[in-house]
Length: 471
Image (cartoon, rainbow, N blue to C red; front, side, top):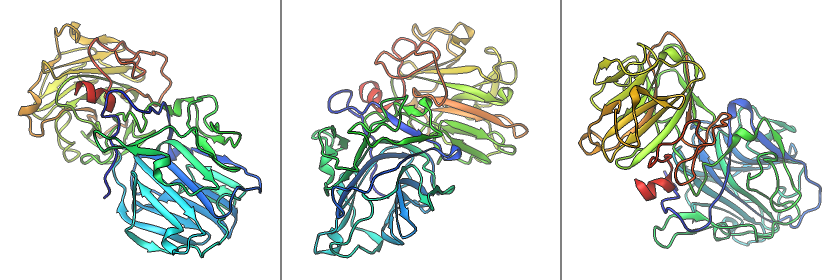
């Protein structure tokens, strides 16, 4: 496992990336571009991409191309979670390292200079600013070979191409930001990022001044009406199955929480839409999942939309992963606190339920405000906090909770859950960049997030910029 990037742990300063693009493999999201035959160089290229995965065990293609059956390439994380570069019928390299962290951003740079005399210098891989040298497979092109990558018929982002058609098993699942292809230069990662002098964390820099070459491009995903726009020039990509909703503010300079697909025993549960949609299938009784980011201090806010079977839902906080499914529901443990759609909107802690608020159902927006300065938690429905709760002045909380330092793990996580194995449950989580159309337009005091309800004063969206300042 290589080290990961959890950027944005400084509240301000440096270069900020505004947007990423959220790819969902289940809806076959991808971008493609037809190029001409001219090229700046047939021997020198560079690909740079910032990537946050939403699942593991899949062939997550970042970049692919096909000119013919014998001239094709793909740069991707394979179904064993290794990074692989395939070109013209063989693997250039396959890493020993695994890339299984779905909570943070990676930066990958693949640079080719086929004029180099030393074989291993002809193609290099950099991860988070450091050259990768440990490979299970290495098979470099011959010196001065013609690199097919810049001179082809199809460029794709988010899927590989076989016989000019997308491969159904190779769609990317997750987020990409600052995707750059350089035609004509073999650049090292310092053209795209730098180590922060205070934290030694690898962070992006402004790439707008680079020379991209004839078939090069820069995808910044800042235009929601043209997500395939080449911010450098005219090599624009065609958008396939992606909409303005897929433009995200979860980026490599401000990492937002998502649902943790690696967490606990989730039964028949599935995740999609950048790990923000949770589907609890039949038989996934009493499971729940936590946010990828936990907190031990500060005041935090998130929302979730009930999509299906609202009478079986639970929202809340916990210090632990979901236990074995069919075991205990969210709220059964000593440090679990939940608001249930069933039982007339009861609340539950340590297995003890009591009357609390309104029941909620399909299409309702349910909110949670967590105050770890005073150890209180509040729940709301469609913009109204229940039981006359007021998170701003600290009155009528749903629970006064155990301090994080006294729990088993020292942190609380936002949670969404299922109360029964009889019916399916569908949750859509909104930690600030919702996977659904949200017209509320409400942000926290730092301007982060798009929420349906007003964020209580002093509470913040769960992202790394806010953590640096208030966590």
